[in-house]
Length: 121
Image 1 (cartoon, rainbow, N blue to C red):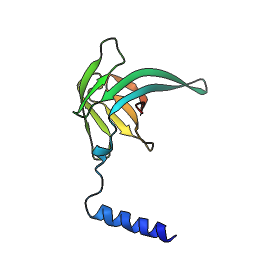
Image 2 (cartoon, rainbow, N blue to C red):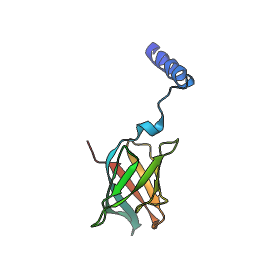
Image 3 (spheres, rainbow, N blue to C red):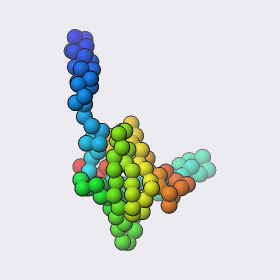
Image 4 (cartoon, helix red, strand yellow):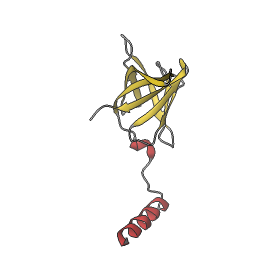
């Protein structure tokens, strides 16, 4: 129990020091596989929707078409991805409670939300 209190105090002091890890730095770069889900007839139907790759230079490539679509992304203070240009233009990928997993919505696909998870190991 002593270790728990020590850890809790250390975390509080660390976060007060202003040196807590920036959520933008916590984004894992690499390939993310996406799946659309649709509720039909009492069950969910899952459809693969391709993948996208996040690069350290702030660009992404969506590989769901014969010709890949490229654009840029930024990471907001909460660790969500915001897309500009390319197929996801104007879209946002909200961080979930699981590491390296997002719920993606974007204007050219307004009726669906995709679940995207990092598939790079």
